[in-house]
Each structure stands twice: as C-alpha cells, then as structure tokens.
Amino acid sequence: MPEERLSDNDLIIAVRGGDEDAFAEIVSRYRNQITNFLYRFLNDYEEAVDLAQETFVRVYFALDRYHTEFAFSTYIYRIASNLAISELRKRKRRRLMSLTGLFQGEDQEAEYQPEDGAALPDQLLVESERDRVIAKAISSLPEKYRLPIVLRDVEQRSYEEVASIMKLGLGTTKSRISRGRGLLREKLQDYFDEN
Amino acid sequence: MRIDKGTMGKTPVEKVQAMLSALPRIEPPGDFEVRVRSRIAAERVPPRAGGPLLWAKLAVPALAAVALAAVFFGGLSRENAPERAQEAVPAVETQPLNEPSDDPTEQMATQLPQEDEIKENEVAETATPTVASRNSRRERPSRVPAGRRAAVAAPENTEEGGAFEEAGRAGSRILPRGLESIDEPRPDAAVPPAQTAVKVADLLSVLGIDAERSSTGWKARSIREGSVAQKSGVQPGDVIEAIDGKDLSKVTEVKGSISGSYLQVNRAGRSIRLNILPK
Image 1 (tube, helix red, strand yellow):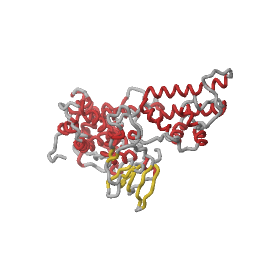
Image 2 (cartoon, chains in turn cyan, yellow):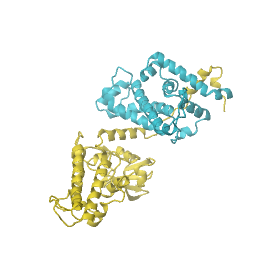
Image 3 (cartoon, rainbow over the protein chains, first blue to last red):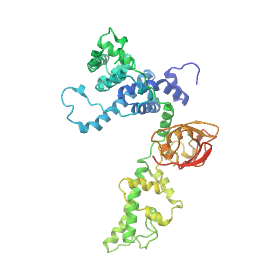
Image 4 (cartoon, rainbow over the protein chains, first blue to last red):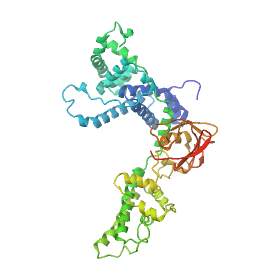
C-alpha cells in the first residue's frame, strides 16, 4: 500500500490497472459512510450491510465506465441510493399487497414503512431512546424527502452533491430538504414539547 | 427522556438538523471486505443459465417418467433408451422403441423417452458445454447399487422439493455459490476453471467461515449465522486443514476441481472430518 494518501481517482486508475490493494483501500475509505447512509435510509442493519457490499461489487465491475471528472463519492452514493430506493420499493410491493386501502388519500406522507426485523449490532443495542425515535421518524419519511435529508443532514454532503447524487436541480433539492426537515419536526413535535 | 442542551435556543428545524448530525455512526461488521471480495469472486464467473436447480427440475421429471414407464409398461429397451434411463433404470425386458405398436399403452411408453430426449436437447441448446460437462458425470461408474438407483429415479414428490432432494442424492450436489463455479468448466469463462486460482479466504467465506491463516491451517474466527459452514458443524476456533482432501495449511489459493464434499478440521488438537451440507 502506498505511503502517501492517493486520491480516489488515483485509486480507481490503479484498480483499472489490476491493483487489488487499491480497491481494498476504496472499500476501506467508504464502507463506514455507505453502511451508515444505507442504515439511516433503510433502518435495517442487515439490509444496509448487504446493500453496502452490493454497492462495492457494482462499483468494482463498473469502474471502467466511471468518468473521473465526477467526484467518486457522488458516484458511489448514487449507486448506493439507487440500490436503497430499489430495495424500498421492493419492500413496499411485497408488503403493501395486503395493506391496500390503509394509505389511500392525499397525504402521501403517511407512507407505510415495514417493521425493522433485522438483528442489530452491539453498538445499536445501546442506542438511546432519542436516537430510536429519530430513526423511526426518518424511516417514516417519504422516499423523496428521506434520501436528501439523510444525505445532507446525516451524511453531511453538500447541497450540490446531494443534487448531483439525486440528479435533481439545486433548487428542487433544497426545497425537498427543507420540506423533509419540516416533516421531521412535525413527527418529532411530541419530543420537542417534552423537552 | 433526557434534555439535550446542545439544541437549546435553536429553532425546531435547527434542532432537527442538530439531532440528525448527532446520530451515532453505524459501522459494518469486521468481515465486510472479505464478503465483498467473495461476492466479486463469485460474480466474476457469470452464473450458468438456470443453475443446477434448473437442470434438476428438467432431469428429475424425465427420470421419473422413464422409471414409471419401465415399471408399468416394461417396454423400454436399454439399447435405445436415453443414456439417463440406462443409468437410472435396472435391466428390463427389451423391445425396440422404433417399431410401431398397436397397443396404445405401449405407444405411450415409447413416447416418454422421446420427451426426455427433447428436454435434453432443450438444455443442450441453452447451455450445451455446461450441461454436457454435467452429463459427463453420469458416464462415470456409479457408486450407487443398481437396485438403489432405480429407487432414486422415482422420487415421491417430483414437483418442488423432489428436484432438490433428487439432485442431492443422484450426485449432482447443490453447492454454495462460488464453489460450483470452480467445479466444472464453463464455456464463457476467460480462464479454464481448472487453472483458476481461488483465494482460500474467499472460498471459506463463501461457506460462511471468516478465517485467518495460521501455521496449521485456517483458523475460523467466526461462522456466519445460517451459513453452510454452520449447518455443517464448523465452529469458531476450528482450524480448517483441508477441503475435499486438498491441503489448505500451506496455501493461500487453491486450483483445480473442488466439489465441496467435506472439510477436515482440527478441533482442540483432534482432526475431524465434517461433511459439507447444503444450506
């Protein structure tokens, strides 16, 4: 492994040249971020880990098609986002079949979110009640607000990068983030009142 | 519920932002990279069309049909029946299949092998070399007694579970993903599988074993829940010495054919053999 820290693009070029260690370095750099992002988006640890692995597998096989003029972080978050959205839609298709009628009406914010049945790692077993309340509130957000909120406020990506990941205009992105925060505030209103 | 002083004096939206950014970071498990590598190794060789279950689904009804025809009509010829029927069905009274018969029941009996041939051809068209290599297994001398082979040819439940069970008994093992890829040659693989080196760590990971190399073999650090290894009885702390008789103690990669039949592990100083069971 080289001593000086290579840029993501240097690593990608190295991987294209057959350097497996360079790919290991990419995994090492992004595994925590991607897993955390997917966990906060899906609220399911096992699924998050599985999709994070799938993200890296897809990155590996698609590196030849990656254009280095874009930030690699944008690229990998976009892959992870697509996988997460796809998973979310699969879940809804699977489980909403028997729940048709529950969410009819205009209020799309009342989107059904399946229970999180995945085993939690030790670190989550000590998660505070507040964190659980927040995680539940996030996972109850509609997908179009949840994704930018998690990217911006959890993963601390810039507005520009969130827009790029979601392939949306900057104004639309900011608007969704703002709307998402408003929805979260409403969902957490009881918590605020208590404090 | 505790009061978060960090959010005092802020607007509700700012509080939301602060709470989100303060959420604890979640990390992946320790074997994350190994699993990624394992998945990449498995994906490098594209799966064959339909996989082993498709083969079993086609083969078992055909075998059952031939066996039933043999039992009830007794009109099959060992010389003209398909190769599969020869292996599966004990010697029966012979009658040339090509000769037309006036008896409708005998006509039915003679049609069954043709159906079998059609299915064979269909499989051959979609994945000829792979299936051919699987078929070549059947040409090997069978270790199953002839009488038992006939019993195997007529499973009780041939629709769903029968196919899997039948395949397992008949020698076409259902293997974990990755193992089967190095078992048989693939026409579309860039490198012939016999020459393909597979990292031992990846191989064990496919079985569900997170292992590190030691002087005597590969020591299992953890066993994945619900994995093939767990089902087969591998325990954390076991030292994997060999797979299918191939010594793993001094290598980091293995080449050649591995069917994934059994592991030789050292447990508390005692060497034991564990048969690898399908997941």
